Image (cartoon, rainbow, N blue to C red; front, top):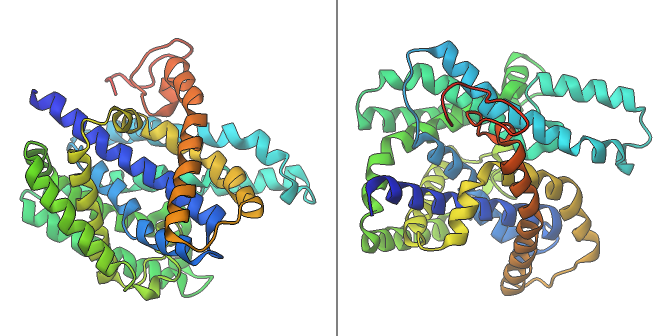
Length: 366
């Protein structure tokens, strides 16, 4: 198997595991916790590392560019266009939502538009990741080319995570002030945290690529990484019920960083072990449309399950029921993902593709 094919397969598998964890975690968050202690414990476990994993994976493919303006245009069509698209998809449902029926539509619409101008995708909150990644990648385009060694990138990454958590904590201490407003605008404070994981991912990519050729070594790394996560994810008590990067909630900075990196490494190794699973590869190749479509479940479907589906406080039953809901959600998404890839790939991150309804949004292929 050639390097290019090997790279694509294992990366898609890791992404596939990541998107499964996202769907699974959102079911836990919106449907089965916090009333269920077993569900809350699993939520704490997954949220301790699953969002850092996405930023680490994004850092794998960073390429320096001397054309910063061109990079900005590219990121707008690859990150912000999908944010707008998936928000508009949920707009009709939001407009008919009974929870906001007592407010005038024009009032909410103006507020929603103001939120989007501040980089807060309230129509589809799941796409916050794309907004944060957009800011993170802009920062990376300026800073990372100046870091020429692996150790410099790792050291910068660790420093950025710790500084970002400090900034987030400081901006949360009051509801007013410059730090508060800046931290909430375009997820700037969280983008500093994300940049740290992004830089570490960029530094680790050559080693991850070598790992893809040694499955036995990957198995050892997965076992060790998983053991570390299972042994540490409950220690970060100051994170509250769970780490919530979208809410700038991390708990202790060092405990958060340690568990997040251990979990990310473990999932990367697991992806290498599961490269033969075709289903994971399909999920991995469609991470962005699945992320956007998950907003439908996150906002409207999963919360309704909390009222009609009561699961006993049992880790095994929580696991089985959440896996069932996750699998069913992905099946429901499949036709929409197919149609988006077929007719509007430009709106789901594949901005270099042409037609059939829209021209390519950038000159270079995605």
